Image (tube, rainbow, N blue to C red; front, side, top):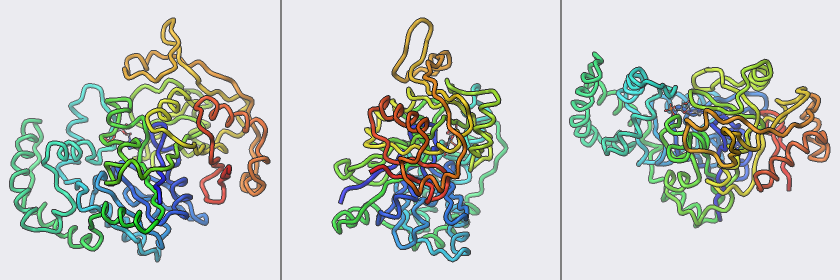
Length: 425
Ligand code: IMP
């Protein structure tokens, strides 16, 4: 059976959690393949809100398997807290964690803050240790999940790593003192609690394929936060795009049949970096409040702007989306005139392709198409009647998205709940 991938097409927070949860009902195995506690998904089931940073969104379907793949960086304390909070609600997670996933250590979080302090132009990271953990993985200083279950291996690795980290902190002028013994004790304890979940997850996914099971790959963050293809350096440190789905889970690209791009009906971004369609006016504020656009992880207000198809079309090219899921269409209700950016003016040039240079992007002025808006409605009732019951102006807005991207819209989301979703067959 082939796999389906769900990816963000903008700067994260597109509503992937809800779309993944929707598809997880049809999948047998859900795999998260990158990122760490920098992500935050909010999922609403029967009016109950669940907020996760590490657990895959599929975990709310306990009859199905949820996997944290090798491309994720795991903060074991946060993971244990999330597992325990689910257990308290009577949900036993059907979870496995890759033995190859790297672990976020205390010095990664300290380094994240220290580096941000020293940087001239801040990235605005979530300070969860993501960048330093991925740096250690690439430098081959990483601690992996398997090490937490092997005292001898962990002891030996820490004996090498801690003195190096200590010297780096001193060079940074930080008075941090790292205790080898305390870190060893704390992380072995985490290892004991998590041992039953740690496994060779790529083998388990391969067996699921052999057994003709449906596999769903769940991206965190979005295309424009990808370490290679995003708005570097204002990105995260992992591969958030389709290629990352394969390396971060240990499956072949030939297994992927569908790649669903999640497009929020407008644009948001947290942290620093250029955002050409940003609305610094009352409309931007209205969208932020109506859309609840405050970070799930840090609580920071998200910067809001009109939908930018230069951004989305670039994501379509990098990922090869087979269909789009357009989310939060309800949030735009009541705005009389809507705009979608279709190109940029850069000096006297028109740019259609997303530029790599943030210096150019900063100076880009959006070229927009204007649309008439639609009134607020009881969207749950509209959804029951299907796509044809959507306001004509909303259909025109959706048509523009699919004609500009040349990718069909397969899902329209009109609210946070599972029952506020229209699937276009
Ligand atoms: P880091 O991932 O904590 O290193 O942060 C790097 C950049 O990615 C910052 O601008 C963050 O705000 C952004 N970022 C990281 N995770 C998310 C996410 O889940 N949604 C939106 N932005 C994110």
